[in-house]
Image (cartoon, rainbow, N blue to C red; front, side, top):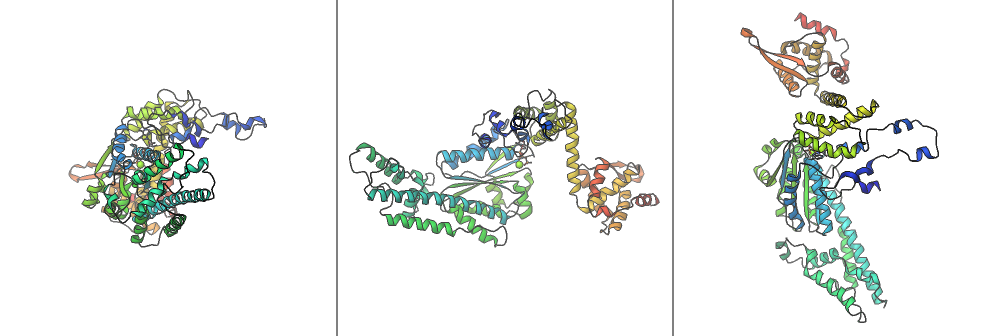
Length: 563
Ligand SMILES: Nc1ncnc2c1ncn2[C@@H]1O[C@H](COP(=O)(O)OP(=O)(O)OP(=O)(O)O)[C@@H](O)[C@H]1O
Ligand SMILES: [Mg+2]
């Protein structure tokens, strides 16, 4: 049941109540019934006044409604509706800062598109790829190839099933059995018949020119179908029509041949291994898999800048020129990025092809963030768990972070967790402030942990100086300590110029603050101070195995005064 509850409901204005299925409603279930003894977890479960359903505040949750994104969603839909008409939609480039709802909106639209295409039996497939994870041309193509191979196999199986049903109907008919009530169902296989008739005419290419109509609507099939049905119902006494009458098949052998050839097709698909093939072989397999069926394919490349950064624009070049070579299908690309600069690195042809349509996701302001949080919090929290000022404060903090909805939701969830942990009944402003500090610290820890060793050494030098009470640290001082640290762990010593650059990078990351001050006739110098909590940062640095070798740090600082 809860599976269904999490389903996408296909409507923009569905209220969130059906998402309650997520909640782990242990409240008064089995636990108390036959086992009155209080177990380890009972207390913890019963004291849960804060969250009703925390999942809806997690980044992995795709909301049913996206307030303040209807313009962008409608624009996407207006472009993509072409796919439902069997036409190729323009490529779309979506961009906007982090946390502005790009991924959520694109996923929302793609679910709608797929469900509508199923409703009207229009062949349209949407494939989503996160290029931060899948970041080379090989991997993108391999993933797409394998997905389409899987889809093709599923469709082939369905076709074989329907052909086998047809064979059964013919057998029954020829055995003289009256057409059973479900016999008429056997006339109902648009895909297979369309496909069979299509392969009959595959020498002519006229149906390519009218690509706006899919073969499911071809006259051959629908006429046959209607004729079959009216024949059966109009005169009940008349000879029941032959099961093959409304199909492109003339004999059982033809059906059997068709099944054989479908089986062969199925066997011919070879999954692409995740490494090892030449890329053009992967491309060819992908190409053939996509072109196996007549359909429109929408390929969504999220974090597309990461792909271009890592492996250039070959993938995009290849994908965007596919349509001129595909015979049956059409491909359209949606690229999503929070960094527009990546387009500077694109081949001009790729750039103009990808950016046929552009949709901008502006940052949310505090009021919009408030709406977003309010929608989610209805479902996320128990009644009365939120004090009045909590949402406005989360929204205000996140608005300062360039209008990032992810940050706003993180704040609200973390504030709830902190309240829960302190066994408070309600979340109050103070929890939000603590949450803000915690998230900021988590960010710092992550940034520091992933710094290159050289930057870590520079940062460590600054920490050592601060720890020893040095204020307004200058670059020369940092360099001296840095040099000693390098010697201690046998690292290369960079030039002072490079170290100055690394300090600027740390400044940009918000880890240190470096201001240029004028020293009158002595020129200008940088004054550096740490802008993150010292102890936590030091702990992260020392958790790096190379730096943890530095055992006695005191002499270095003294060395500074000697210099
Ligand atoms: N209008 C909105 N209504 C409800 N939730 C939203 C809205 N916009 C964003 N969110 C939520 O905020 C979080 C971040 O959104 P999303 O992942 O779509 O951002 P993004 O623009 O793709 O960011 P990034 O560039 O970092 O990938 C998600 O949890 C998403 O569900
Ligand atoms: Mg995203």
